[in-house]
Length: 211
Image 1 (spheres, rainbow, N blue to C red):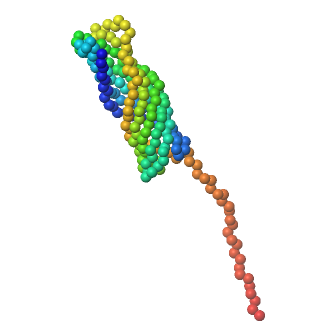
Image 2 (cartoon, helix red, strand yellow; image 1 turned 90 degrees about the horizontal axis):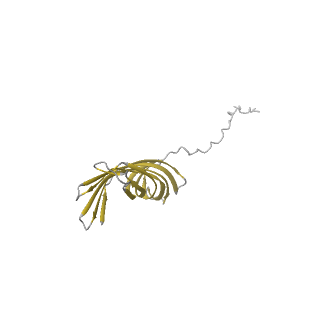
């Protein structure tokens, strides 16, 4: 038996809010939708006499708590590394299994599964202004397992409970984004108290008597 798999690429969209702990450490919470990708698998058995062709689509929702270390700034460029931990919802839909020699087809109902997720980050930020930074980063993320609903034949029969599992879904992402910094927590130093100074009183010059 041998098997091969292929998954297409897709866009992802996310947003987050964070806090700068100090000049070296910062943290954020992010939410992200990972768009539809298409899966195809080919499984041969019996010395190549039997072939199963698998098709499916998937997408994910990903939520992470991330911690980053900024490694210093040179010429407005700040490299950083980070780690993240959270949860992911893996959605598998439109699954079908085609047995090529027999022409048999089985379908899997759409299903979702929540998993523990984690990620590692590396990238560089460019300081456009004191409040805006552009980021280019790489991320490896593990999204956990996916699963289909129970399989049924094209005739609608289902003799056993036999969902298909997608083990250890991972992704390598190249991301381009921006960070907007707010100065809402900066406190201006207190101003010195104003002391009232009365205007000077006019004093006429002393009279001088000539002898």
